[in-house]
Length: 119
Image 1 (cartoon, rainbow, N blue to C red):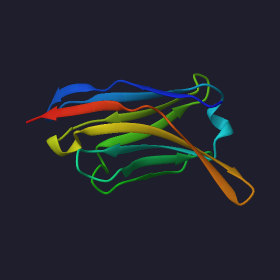
Image 2: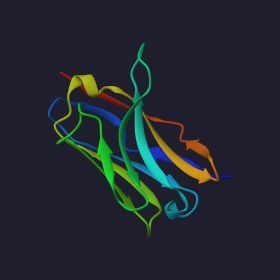
Image 3: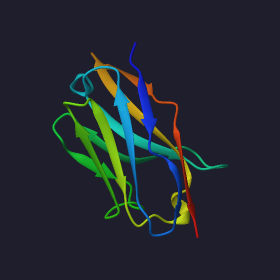
């Protein structure tokens, strides 16, 4: 059973930085892609950043230039470096991983870590 455990969330002032970590129970190379999602109260969950096995990345327009996603295959950990945080970045952040099996895709989720940015 795949387990993803997030950490690194917290309370930070606007303009500050946080680094989120997502520790996987096995090799992150087993996943076709991994990503970070967030969900603010009353809003739908949205993709923040993603990275595939080749190292290609994509970002939501709202975080481009401020957030960086990366993975450490030795530590089996996914990171999200968040700089110049804004109050609108406040949300629960979730780590996700996807595995393709034939034409199907299986998604795994972590339990989430709260990020709160004060103005």
